[in-house]
Structure formats: structure tokens, C-alpha cells
Image 1 (cartoon, rainbow, N blue to C red):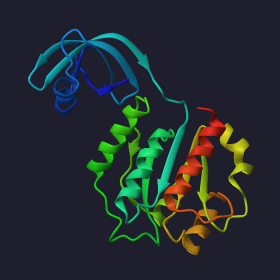
Image 2 (image 1 turned 90 degrees about the horizontal axis):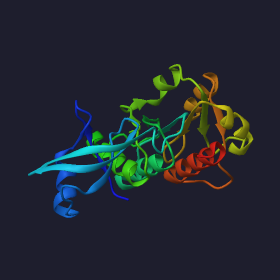
Image 3 (image 1 turned 180 degrees about the vertical axis):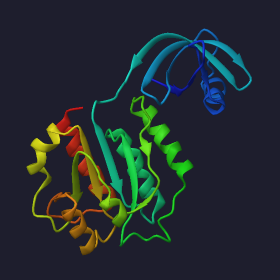
Image 4 (image 1 turned 30 degrees about the vertical axis):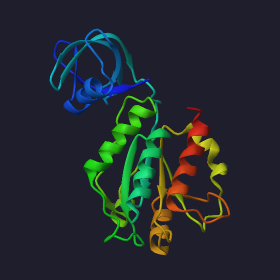
Length: 237
């Protein structure tokens, strides 16, 4: 099932952005009258029929609409330290979308390599969009601007807040009931080298629950994948 991003026009019809239109016509060889599947990134899915093709312009007549297609009803934020290996960090972002994250918060921690762990928002947005279509979701996750960990931890954050640490004594499975009941869950994953002692102490002071993801030391991307997978399993989506 090929899914395209589309903009909703004032008359209720759809128009594909130029890059999507080119892929639709030049690569997939779609023609007027063909039926295609679209999302708008705002929680809506559309089944439609191509009504117009002109150069890089494709318009679609809507045949059916589904609201919140592929989405769940609770918020899941992944707050994670960027990695100096950009491919691995981009992989985290892709998998977070597939596993149901509704927001991504890049977090600059004490042990984050701030000179190497650089990324471009535009590149991450492209990855978010591609993953959204691939996993059949319809609402684009929010990509927050990068934030420094210390002031960010001091801010007020609603819902269940879990911080994964290699030194935590409580396994994530002991939070199962709280995860199941929460309308918002934030999972905080640190950099290579874990959080600093000061960051962990501040998290404890500000109401975060320190959780372990097992006895073995995990890479950042593995910890993010495991934590989100567990939340997904508990929530049953």
C-alpha cells in the first residue's frame, strides 16, 4: 500500500506536494482515474481518485476519509540524546515513529558529544515523514528543538516520566500498571556514557522515576527501542 502526503484544498480535494507528485507520476506511473491513498500529517487518511495531472501537480478527488488513522489516544514522548554517529541517531528517530512516539525531544546531556552530535531538523523531518507513511500512521510526531538537559529537567512535565539508567534498581516491568494507566508517558534515554550523577539526582528531585532496562549495558539506540517497545506492548497498540 503506497501512501502519499497531500495538502487539503479549500474545496475538500487534495493536492500532492511537488516531490510526492513526481514520485506518483514519474516513478509509479499513476494516471488520472487511478485510486491512491493519502495522509495529511494532521491525523487524517484519505482514499481518493486522481482527477488532474499537470507537470508537478497532482490533484485528488476524495472518496473516503478516516480520522486518526493508525493513531492511538495517548501521548508518548521520546527524549533522547543525539549521537555523534548520525546514522544511528536517525535510526532511532525512524523506529520511534514506527513504535508510536507522538513527540521527539533531542536532549543535550553532560556526556553528549555536543561537537559531533549535530543533526539537521530538515533531515529528521524527512525521516519522520517517510517512517509515518511506511508504518501507516497519519499524524506527524512533534519534533521539538534540542534542549539542554538541566533546564529541561527543571521544567514542568505532565504524565508519567521514566528515565532509563544503568544504575537504576527498578526494572521497567515494575512500572507496567503506571504505564497502562497513563495518558502521557515520557521516556528519557541518555547518551553513550549514561547520564551524569548530577542529572540523575536532578531527575529524582523533579519527580522522574529511574528505571532499568535489564542487567546488560545497552547502546542508546537499543535502549530507546527496548523502552518504546515495552510501552507499546503494555498499551496494546
